[in-house]
Image: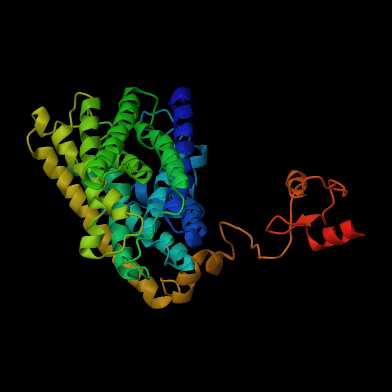
Length: 464
């Protein structure tokens, strides 16, 4: 089959868009964390790109999507390890008309961001080295099998008919359950919940949410694997569901707390993006708006569950990704319609009965249970061997300086009574009216004190 240049161009762009989501997530999570750990939080996202990309080439793609022989329903095989031979395969034999390696790269970006998403649940208290080890093990033992179950031809959830167009189960329920497990393994941050530990940089949060929303069009519409009508449906549904969810979240804030917040509209947007992900090509635009409104309102309340049950999910991975992913997957059973995509199914409201809802529930339950149990075991083993939680003094002083020998913000130190160099306009303003500033404009020794007075050296010069 010849390469479809239009679809290939769209998939290359979509792959780049999805990769951009991980730096976007770094800003989103970084802004929500405390100033003393923002670099560590962002590094946890960026290092996921580094490690998961290599795993995906060596064996990840092969185990997720190649033929697994006798265990094909559970895991793929190693026939495509190292992508050997795929570099010369012009197009996949699936009718999409896109090069096989483009699909490989596209799927790699999904694996990358899934690992990065988990980090938000353990912000401020994880060893960086332990996180790197965890990411490699987790993507191998948890992400890859679930991706095979849901998306690979022959995977058991794929054969069952559980629908997940772009990752509601594989990415979001998976990451949300893993985040809950790690939050339980590592325990609470020091001072939580008495100290609310508010976001240190809300503009970062809004920037990150904007980048995520932008990249998510590649995430969802790109999952059509071509420039076609299904991509168009996924694109418009991604737009309107996210808009509805962000609006619903701030409305909850308005009536519950009295004020809509920037953190709320950003969190609502992400909740809408999460919820529409599995359903974006299986519902109508009206259905997408309904789904978004439900997700935004429910997730706005779900983020407070951690206070009720006592688990410290630092950046609300459970309340947004786990709850949002479950909602999106299950609502296909109510709002789904084959009228927008023949590969979909009719939900309850489209006359399809409860059949599809049952299939969706199986997919949700299997993903949640497997990810929760396996992640807890992996996290415990790492904690018992190399240690997963940061040292107490490092957590208090800030993981940025302890783990990376850096800080995000260098405010400098100005000591009272010590001269500070000022640029010429300020220097001149500091000279009393009627006096003459006889120094050159670029004299680095011309200083004034913090109180605006001339420095001692300047006064001596004037007296002379």
